[in-house]
Image (tube, rainbow, N blue to C red; front, side, top):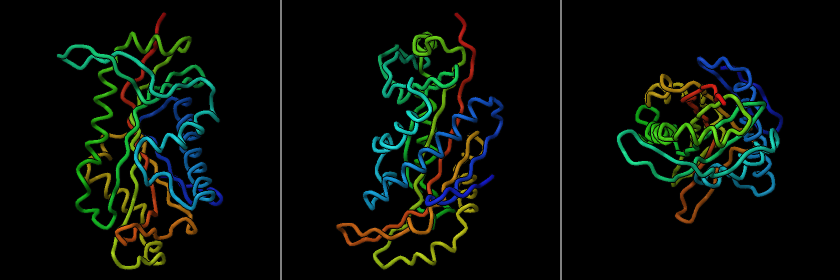
Length: 242
């Protein structure tokens, strides 16, 4: 994975596996960088991390990051779902984005990773990804044609945000945390959860040192968030014919 240092934000690494579409790669690189930069600006103005909340709060940095790339996008796009062997029903997809003649349908998920327990990561890390993929698989293709408008290529994608954290009743040492190899920890977690094999987008944001500080909550437990992983899966790419 290649890493670049983004001023005031930290290091961002992105890796693509079996993705050859230049437009898709361009879109995802710019989107992830935008999410990192806007998350950092959010911290600088609020002294809080937007990613420590749930999936819905991530829209606060994802929406403007998409808007920097295109004005053609919708949040919670209504469509019809048709799970295999079941009746169809109305639903929605988190994002429809039109970018350089491509339509992206994106399902977002969010979870947490206690990096000190890398040998036994929580089961819902893999489960969240599979849930997003199932939601994408159930979307009717004629609804995709309707959403895409004049675009000729459709890409369905699941994107999972994984927040690295540590919690303790005792004071957490930032210096000790900074000595950890989060790049290696990320790889181990991906292998343990099976996401290394099932995903074709892997990305890790290691926060700038100034952003890695313990937070104290009402129960007097300290928590620290040194890194955020982004794992994606392109489920379907197909040409949309007239």
